[in-house]
Length: 221
Image 1 (cartoon, rainbow, N blue to C red):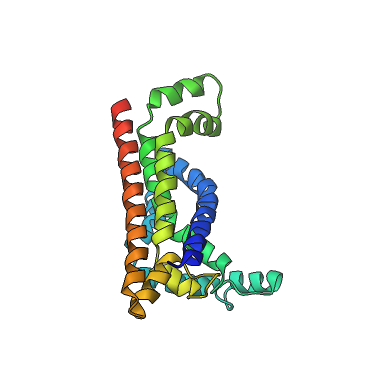
Image 2 (tube, rainbow, N blue to C red):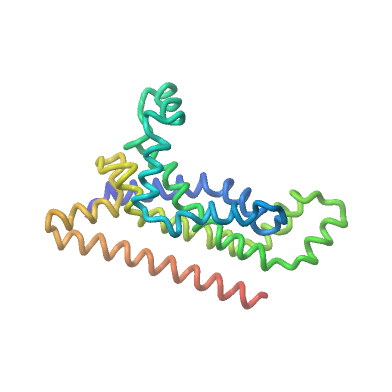
């Protein structure tokens, strides 16, 4: 078992969720309650990682984070290192890749909040942002928890984008999914089976938690 790769996967997933949380909370507001012309476009753009092949998404991320891009040049100027094939670049790629896995359960849960409660909070003098942060989000806590769990789990298992943007550098970008790929390539089927079983067990536990949260949400509806 490649514990270094597993620990790196956990670190990467935790960091990506920490960055996703404020971004997802900010984007969920207009997606759940917005009534503006570009809402459908925003929903489509944030959902692209769900349908785009990982190789295509990985290619565009390499272009966006590469040494010839404005972001890549600025990062190299500030830090002296490149974003591509680094933990930091891989982290940015994971945030973009996992954004829809955070947004969709949160937006769905926010849509199920009783609008009358939000209207009452508004009549009591709360600003729209205050209503969202103090009333809607706490009432949609199950959706928030599902968003955290799903995005964390997907970050653990992501392969295509991780391989393209991060490569396979032990201790830096070699995650559990990449380690599994290497084990299969080297015909280490016993090691591959152990890694695969660990990832499978984790996935089943995550899906069970999400299913339970959704059942409880329906029970309270």
